[in-house]
Image (cartoon, rainbow, N blue to C red; front, side, top):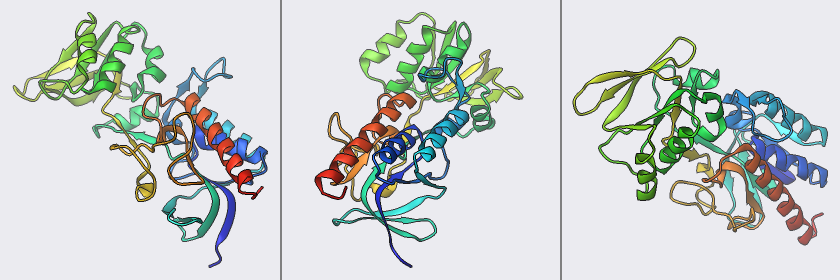
Length: 314
């Protein structure tokens, strides 16, 4: 099988990947974009997006990603609905293999594989998250829709504490479910949560079930020490137990932190491998927003263009 050669290979199809594709296409880099397992990434399970500029009436996540895709295709991006399953960045040539076995050599690679929220795995959780039924993994994204309502936040780390505190400004009451008798969050975040009047912390507590047919109408909890069950009257269920970056296939070549987020040069998209750039949630463990992902996708494409110009390839 012949080896395919491309100037710019983009791995991933969320806001970062598509934005990189728009910029790379307009720079005549003739990018080839592999969508991965789910075209559009996490926004495909986001119903109403109201915090992305340019959509004054809001937009459904899948529609927004379809708009991004069409714009990338308009400028000539070659979009392929397939996964990259293996890479080799050890030599001067950046080699990747698709799930169908095709070998591709790329002058530049832009990684925009994103990160996936960790879920509890309980009944109705995935269904409600996908249909806008009251389950979310992002308070900043969706908290607005629960103004004046009662919600649950699951988790005991900094992310959970930050989400609970953010929601406390919007919601009537916030219930934090902590599996242990202590929180993993930093001391300052713990104190902030404990001092917030409308946040109730439930220690040694886990989620037993989500109540509701098509959306969250309540949450059944269970105390892990006493076995006591309780029902919370809430309409929102926020899971804040962390995210897992989708970067496993790059671990032998790309520098990452302990969780798997790709390390980039501060303020740039450059990785430790020359000609390989990272954008979006694959390298962002702080903001994780569509608009910031798109911004870093732009940065990655511009960095790739400059790299190719310096090498005399374009």
